[in-house]
Length: 235
Ligand code: BTN
Image 1 (cartoon, protein in one colour):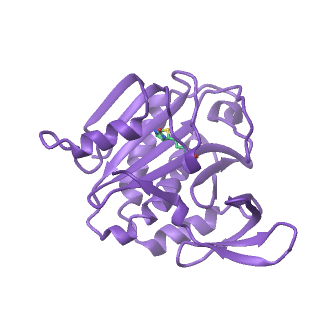
Image 2 (cartoon, helix red, strand yellow):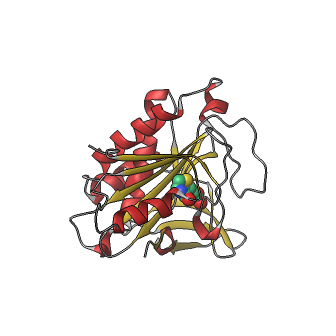
């Protein structure tokens, strides 16, 4: 069952690091589907070297250990599967999420969840942060943030979100790429601003190889952006 065994920490630096250490523990290695959660991270990591910040107890902070049966060259597709799983998980709350390449989850055009996929040859750590009960956000954002509470107008138990995401990820990580990419296209945040390096563009489509079809800002020309930056290193 995904999300079990689970280790929960009131405070930690980053659930990504704890999940990685658990996966590498020779005496008690984390199995496929194991989960590390926290109420608060003092050094939460986002993509592109950014910090991921949330006040204690307001966000669902999760790092799943996956040990896929398929070759590591295909691990990057897990980021797409996980983002789709988050969208699936939010649906029963009455929320219609959209997906922004490579792995952001949007509600009403604003970012409600982000994912960080870190791979090693033997395992993958899928880090997911869902904004659940925040009402205020500080900082500068490429995509303005939101939370479930802001969208629904009511609080949601953080653990309900953790359970829903674990269940949805268990199903989606078994899907093939055709099912994942079809799900993505159904929920694609067409027109959302995407960034690669210093370049900005508008998301137009998702190609069969996982690259994004982008209309470049200013030039009005189109480009295909590969999804390599969706993945970091766990080791
Ligand atoms: C992003 O949008 O930049 C990705 C954010 C990923 C944040 C999650 S929160 C749980 C896990 N632990 C971390 O340090 N990062 C991920």
